[in-house]
Length: 202
Image 1 (cartoon, rainbow, N blue to C red):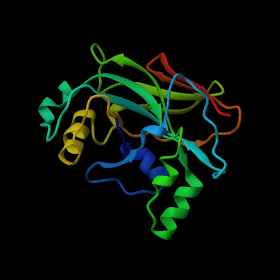
Image 2: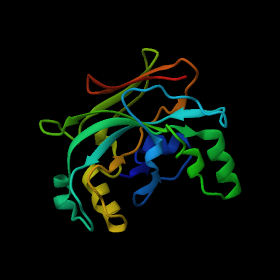
Image 3: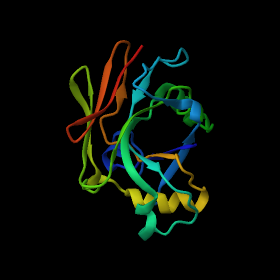
Image 4: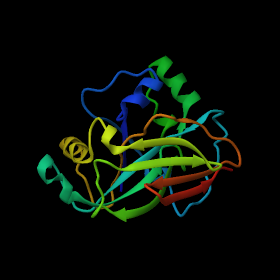
């Protein structure tokens, strides 16, 4: 199982970090040890003083595929969920400034909390609201209509380079509003009004 994360897939998020808009999907990988499930708490790592939340809709791949045609990509997932791409922003900035790879800032243990999944049937995948509440206040909210590259386009593109396997996860990008988490924060992720993610920061 691999975790594939898409960067800069919402224009306003790219702008808030002063990044140019991509002409094609950008992706990086997290190891399976980054996965955090069952609403287990997230422990702030001792190597960072600026860990940011990035709420994302997650696709779960349900069949093996390589070089998938975009018109058939919808057959390769039947469920979507919510996850968080935790980012050690201070470590990331140091890496960028020095021209180093910055997986260390994205791929550390527990950096990919994953919530529940729901069937995609009866959902308007191109007009889905989702949000992250922290301590009962909304911090991030987005709609899939604002995606630069939509789900099927992502699957087709990624599968040119990587074989997609059953159980692989695609974190599809985060909307604007990313920011730091702190000790004892309570994070709740909602797809429309259904809560799929609930965890505390320790």
